Amino acid sequence: GQQLNQSPQSMFIQEGEDVSMNCTSSSIFNTWLWYKQDPGEGPVLLIALYKAGELTSNGRLTAQFGITRKDSFLNISASIPSDVGIYFCAGRSSQGGSEKLVFGKGTKLTVNP
Amino acid sequence: DAGVIQSPRHEVTEMGQEVTLRCKPISGHNSLFWYRQTMMRGLELLIYFNNNVPIDDSGMPEDRFSAKMPNASFSTLKIQPSEPRDSAVYFCASSLVGVGYGYTFGSGTRLTVV
Image (cartoon, rainbow over the protein chains, first blue to last red):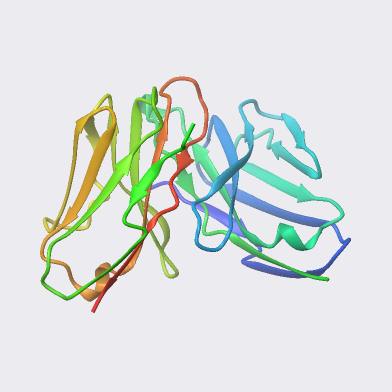
């Protein structure tokens, strides 16, 4: 089945540093999504990307939909302690009109004050 | 909007007992998804419904698991009999088909089977 390879698995950074994480797939996706999960809660949508090459920002977050439609990255600038959490990429393929999202395994972010 | 509502938030049960997890999707959403999250396997899709009809249940682990959606505002995931390896966080999510939006997740049910 479809799989997303998300990296890195975990990151330990200092407050104020920039962060970058990415997802790759052997399959083509027509939608890429980035979620954040806080402890004890469900994932929350951060950014949605719908077109190859699209670059979208949401505050300090920037994400891009790869031109090949097989990858995406998420950047966080000037990290703050509340950025701590697990970040997931998710992709939806165009096959069969499926609404299924495939999720990466997540990147656990720790921000040291 | 109250979001996706799941109950209970925590469930501890003995092996062999029946467990029922409940979900109320966002009003107006016509797709509903049940996911299971574990450290080892991450987020796994168990089953999803479009307009209350099960579309894909290929992720349901075995016959002990069953899911129903009797109407647009309610779904259940049942495990009977439960086993310790079923211990995980179970999430329900809903979305609007065809719009391309991401899912909205509930806060999850943490299930512990002892």
